[in-house]
Length: 157
Ligand code: FES
Image (cartoon, rainbow, N blue to C red; front, side, top):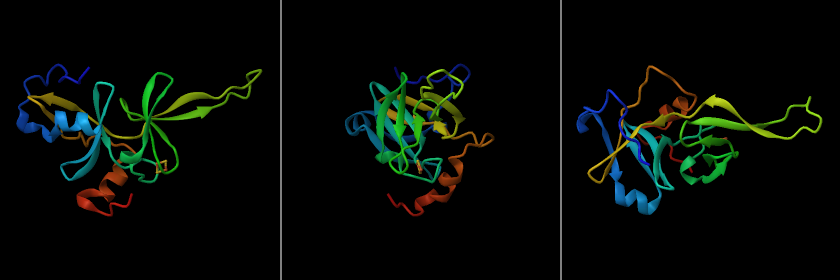
């Protein structure tokens, strides 16, 4: 299911949206890097859905573009190739495996650290994929690296 504009933004003109690519191209390649107001984002197409996140991992700026997508506890996640941090594609939450030492036989369980990676709202229209301008009144850990790598920066993979 594709993201559709939420209530109140239905009237939004395409001019407000930033074109990141053609729907067919992204479906074929499954992932692309794009720019949103100079900011590097990664667009994933996975199991019928588009997801857009800041491209640089909130931990130390690893290239999420090169990560593996995995299903973890029913959540679609990208695993950062640098230190294997796990980030949900839908919400940008950082997940970790925690143990409750008080349990009789402690078993690691996935838990959320909260939203760490900025996700971007996607709109698919007339065969094009658009992203909404980021709301910078809210900040996320990944903003630091998004700024650092803005407008090209050092694109070390
Ligand atoms: Fe992504 Fe460290 S930079 S896990």
